[in-house]
Length: 271
Ligand code: ACO
Image (tube, rainbow, N blue to C red; front, side):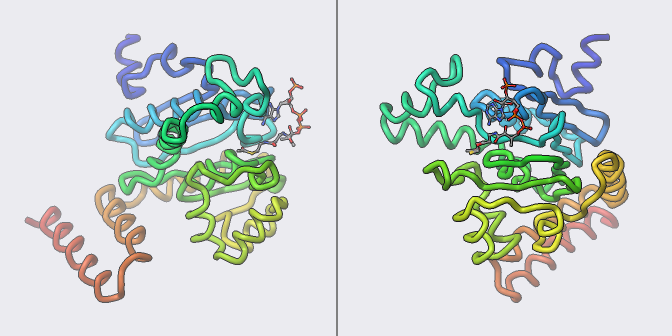
């Protein structure tokens, strides 16, 4: 029985899922996976263990999953990186920025690459990722929301790219999606002032797909999941590939890509 449940959860056991104090919970229900940041008492602050766990979930995501919901328990989606990283003691077992500063550049850049792996897979064409965001989404929290394809937010949401105020740059894959969503000028405004973006502005500038009352967030996400699951799995993945590639192609190249994808679809459907 326990083995069957682990199978359903993509080979994860409860023990694995709560591993190493990552503060991440992972569940799979058929075609829907849910990742919950689960350290509400610390406003879902993120550590290297959080990012390793996110990467591991991505590597082991069961093939049947089509939609991944990323949420945060408690009043805040995520208050960003665990501030203990800025102290001399750091996060137990994970070091601190002062210890990182003493290591060689290549080593630390490699560590950042590993952390980024936890965010990058959320863009895979085979899935659609939805961030359900309430309360604070600061720094790494904002970037985790940006790593998802869609953001459905509660009225009390407050996005803040705080890194430049702390002497850092946003390095968890958030800069490109932010520019793509809101444009360069607005991205400069948001990041270089480290100001807060509230729900009405998030909706207006394209950061959020939908704003709902806090109590309706779960329902709104469920509705979006149902809509996404109503389309054809392989056609959805092929269409997402096309849409993702559109920005880097000319109209002529994009038309050719559409033709290639459609030929493959027709062969699969009628061949
Ligand atoms: N790292 C570690 N602990 C945190 C963090 C964090 N980023 N954010 C909150 N906590 C802890 C608090 O220390 C507090 O712990 P305690 O109860 O043991 O004292 C608990 O979470 C609750 O925090 P409060 O500040 O009491 O909660 P409140 O709802 O009033 O405020 C807020 C929430 C605005 C998010 C505030 O906690 C805050 O400003 N946090 C820091 C945000 C930040 O600067 N993040 C880094 C961004 S840069 C980056 O991510 C790379």
